Length: 129
Image 1 (tube, one colour):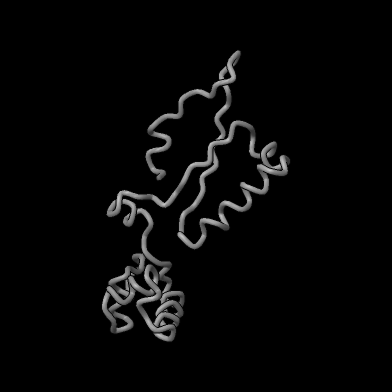
Image 2 (spheres, one colour):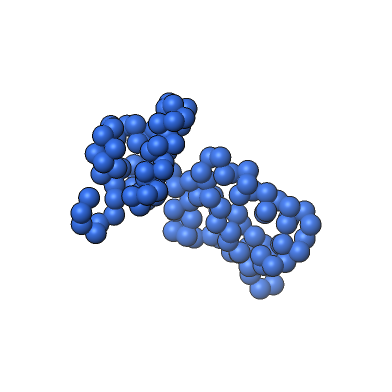
């Protein structure tokens, strides 16, 4: 690849003389490849600047973003000072890591003179699973 565009899965497959399915398996289904082949692909991908499948393209194709919203009624600072909330908030990303799912923390303030939070805009959450 000689120009300055982003390296693609197809470019990497051509560079390594393997199929695009093999490259995809290296990132998405590692159990389908020998450890040596997967290691070679990941090492070369890093050297060539390929960072893995494009999350935006994957979400368009699958209809899933692999992002979950964690709705906080209090500020994040307050939540991290609460022992139980802190344990949950710090453990959730570790729990989700094997699934390549990420967290988006959203604070929703209660409406004045009410203990209820305002409705969350569907647009705000449309990119989350």
